[in-house]
Length: 493
Image 1 (tube, helix red, strand yellow):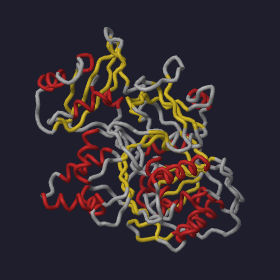
Image 2 (cartoon, rainbow, N blue to C red):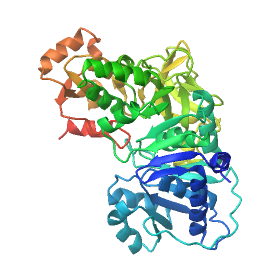
Image 3 (cartoon, helix red, strand yellow):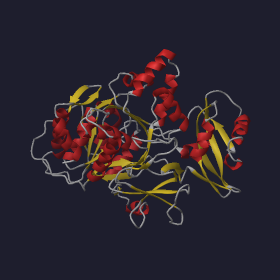
Image 4 (cartoon, helix red, strand yellow):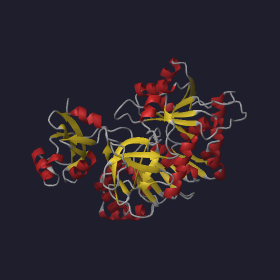
């Protein structure tokens, strides 16, 4: 039995989940999980790794379905609830899922397609009455879940994680961030991604805490919950913090003081899934009294690096290796890099995924001969803390013999009072190899020449952008991460 479902037994009578449909105890999750498991088995003894996809709104039904798949010996494939049919079909075809669970809201999107494909369909709106029997014994080394990479630089790949991987990822964070049974958190993150599944829902339910689900994000709704005095832990992506900060600006001075007092009482506030601008971290500290805990992870490894729960949280840094996780920085010549020397982050530990689904060659290419996972992210170490310089394929710009960090340049541009946000990319150039280009979102009008002059006073000439575009917003994926290839395309259109 998966570890998280075993843990739930110890908290049977406690409230576990609050969502738009109501309030649910751990016992209700346990009962619903067993019913779903029998429904998926339909008389079989064990699903033996069969993939079951589900397009279900975050909340009680989502958790019950996911745990039910695990208890039946299946592999959970959560579908993004905002994806168009073509993207959903890609995941269904790639995983060769033979059963699909669909929430009522998404029947119009998916039902006709999966029915035409001859897949077994389970509707949340039509509860089943399965035959109850014995459930299989599921070992920790069996595959548990397939999540798809964001596809920002290539076609999405299915990341296969085992039960052991997932168990370690949760236990590691419970230890590092000191999760407690008394914790209560709120989830507004998409649940086809590791951040929401493991860091928020998994950790809170592993310790007997309460996880609330917001049906849709809105600044006012989030602030209502943050100011309720009931929550202790809050996790979000930088885009959400940016929106909350903008909403806070509209508050009266008296209300801002009330906000500070309420937020200061939180035990933990975390940012992740994309680089946290230093300006956002500093502003949130003014608003809440909290230095956001920034951490580093990805679909293939869960979380690997984190600023400390106790101790200094350094702006612009993702921290130190988490308990049980090994981290090294490697140069192009396969030499281990020391302080301030940039290198690729490589990870080894029980958190690291099993394989890319049906992609043996891609799996082999992403591991070194001695078994380290190559993240593709470049960092350096300052006084023991890792600082991300960017993704080697999109955030490291090779121009005139220099290796430039797009993230570093973005941080400087965001300091201009007229700039709300920006995205820096490298564009191919015959003379320089690549040149620096930037897409800028403005708070108020400014001439490009004036911005360029301002930057030349703060950056070496070779780091100053040579091309500028002004846009109303930056293209982002479901987790709020800027899609750099889309930025590059803007300069060729």
